[in-house]
Image 1 (cartoon, one colour):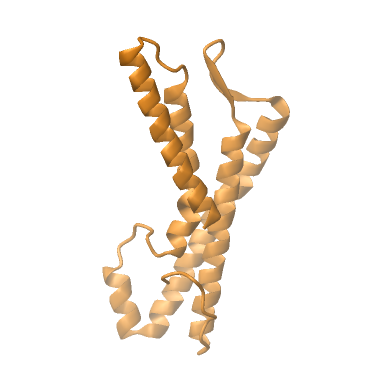
Image 2 (cartoon, one colour; image 1 turned 30 degrees about the vertical axis):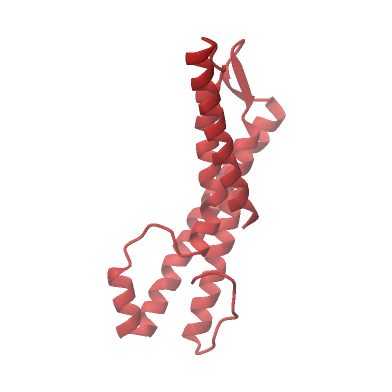
Length: 165
């Protein structure tokens, strides 16, 4: 939830930056350098900061019509399929984490940046770390869903958690 809240604050900061840039451009004929780059970076950061909470709260975009009917009519098959889906999601998140870590290390040690020299530059490592961290949290959430599905398949009730799943 903390990561989600930070993402929401970043959305608010993006909004302020765009309003300040547009206001400066039209009222003072002086735009803020790097606003487009900052917003581009922030959009990616927000996505990964809010991804795990979106998954946890059941708001991830997906088609539930078939899956919901399957779980209702054939709970064992539905839970087994849910286990497979969650395992696939966890593997995808793990693949992103595994590929993001060396890129983050390189960006950190080599001091990579984005932007235009002399106009606006921003270090690349914070964004890569947010991708690494956000996918790590998302992978952990998929793992928790797998445990829940496995417990239900075994006839046990999973522990109660805050969230809508």
